[in-house]
Image 1 (spheres, rainbow, N blue to C red):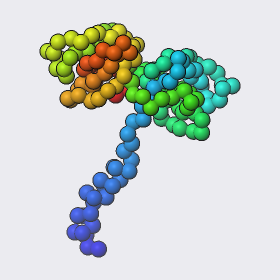
Image 2: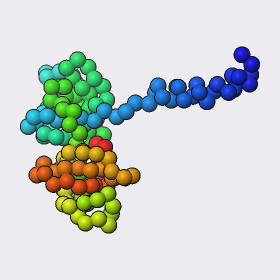
Image 3: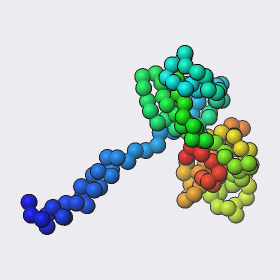
Image 4: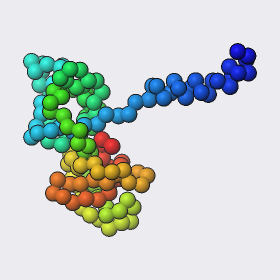
Length: 150
């Protein structure tokens, strides 16, 4: 292999290496009324706190029966996998999020959601917006900077 052909292969090699190291974020939500988060993957471990239904988490490690998850504050804890759902939700992180009827800051308001409220993630809107549904059934678009878990 000549120097020139090696040099030409470098961009392809870089793409392969980057694609292999890139991973999609694995977001889940809490199923059932509540779940306990622990400091280790065991029901005998220290209980850290309880989270409610639809609370979004990011799975960072998966073991048999347990998942290490990150919450909206960046804290890590363990949860039994049986308490996780594939349903995608986001958590409002600002004091009051304005949910609009369209993915536009000038669109009419659909509703407002307070900090800590979990909203079902329906779809990704135009750049910087996600379409959400409140548990009461109202839908709309919220700025991605006002929620966590997208």
